[in-house]
Amino acid sequence: MQLTVLTDKMIFSKISALSSNNAKVIVNISIIISPIGTIIAAADNDYLYIVCFEDTKQFENKFKVLAKELSCRFVHEENKILNTLKEELLCYFNGNLKKFSVPLKTLGSDFQKNVWMKLQEIPFGSTYTYSDITKALGRPTTHARAVGSACGANTHLIVTPCHRLISLSSKGGFNSGINRKEWLIEHEKKYANNL
Image (cartoon, rainbow, N blue to C red):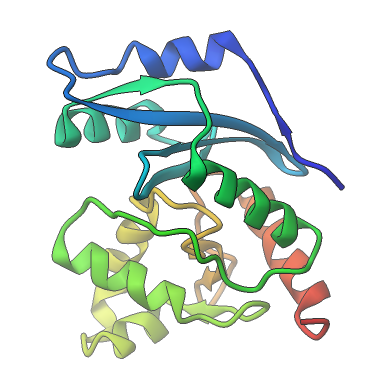
């Protein structure tokens, strides 16, 4: 399997229009075709800021927030962080990677950041419940909904594996579609014992 980088001007022009008017920083954008849809990634030379699908809920808002926080301008060019991400995504989709190493920068509340760090601890091929994460954070299980909201705000889909989080009675939500979440869970189960 290979991942293809698109030069889709329509997707990039939508993102470019969200650049800060007072841009001081450049953030590079990569558009990647994966087995489950078009992935958009944003990184500067030090950190990966966004990995999402083009139809992810709040797609444009994620880039608006980043543009405001960093006072950045988006350019459609590769850099070493995006190249590392592409290599790791290729390995992941081929079943040869359990954990991503690309450096991440998260923008969110302390609670959200704590949830995202706990998500990184869920083993490849496993699923936890929202209640499991609340307990791991030392919070009452009544905070499970807040954990779900933090997952919805995750800007590093697949890399920060919120797809591994399910509810007790269902697969739970996923801001890029339940079908993708199910695909990712099954994909990881298929390769869990091979790595």
